[in-house]
Image 1 (cartoon, rainbow, N blue to C red):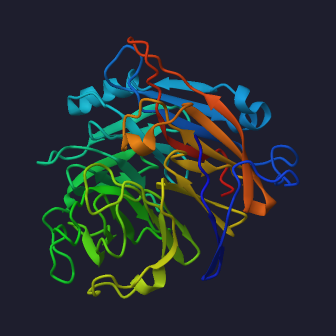
Image 2 (cartoon, rainbow, N blue to C red; image 1 turned 180 degrees about the horizontal axis):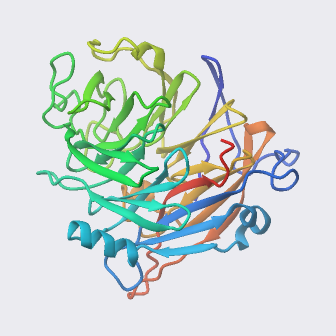
Length: 426
């Protein structure tokens, strides 16, 4: 099931809400793109985080040609299928002594030359040559009392580092990177222990009633690579300077200001937009479902610490109750509209021409996230056509994926999704 959530129109600092129909309006006009004028070449990368067939590790990476997706829609076939249980697992065993398990998120560096694949169950981060789809390095998040995970690994826009969310380990970690040279180093002296650190105000980073569970979910990086907005599982948010050793907190927010478990963020002009989602497990202070969108003015952080708690204050743009779970964002209409996805639709990205939004559709056997919000009916790639200059759209097709286990149960569980530009016209 795919649930489309209200859009937020962005015109400077003013915002207004508009509801979007899942089916679109019959008179809606498709934006120019693959059905008319030529667009930059691109690929859609989708990761099935279930194990490779017949194995207890790995996973499957599907790479779709953008033109084929536009032309064939639901009949499109993956141009490339990469079994992460082969060369990728071999490299991780060689370099770390362990197999990579549960490929959860995939992101590209700004030059689109490398993919960063985070394996949430084992804590591995694989750097992959995007052109050849061959792994070039495998690193692993540090072992901590709570666990060793890599929920997400976000490359900085300037290419100088990759931020890793070691979720159950409650650590924010940094990989120093040189993508041009293909060199990556896990800089353990930069690690920020979110369970034991102190904030600029002298408060504990993690404490009951303040920030009760500091498992980092998604570290959203500003366009100038100077700030990292770290969403937290139990509520609250930390804004971090990523360059010192260890990394340094410059702003702190409690669970009453920013609710927990967000995994969506994007910068538009001078503002950072961040979401929060539902309750990931037994947390009485959070509702089972959640859907919030916040805006932070980036210029307010330029002075650096010390900043009082919950300052600069975010603007709560939207809050929806009921069975909704905010997870994933894209911008449409040349920066006019922010689409915020329900977790049922999960992660999303947009084609270079702005005419299509691709979404990862979860399977009936979810391997991550709370089953109440992560269970899907049709695992695959959703293709949404964008209408009305970004303010409307419809689900046009689903490319189904399947990975039947030895027990006959459908195990496919698509999650990580990103569009890769094949030209530099970004």
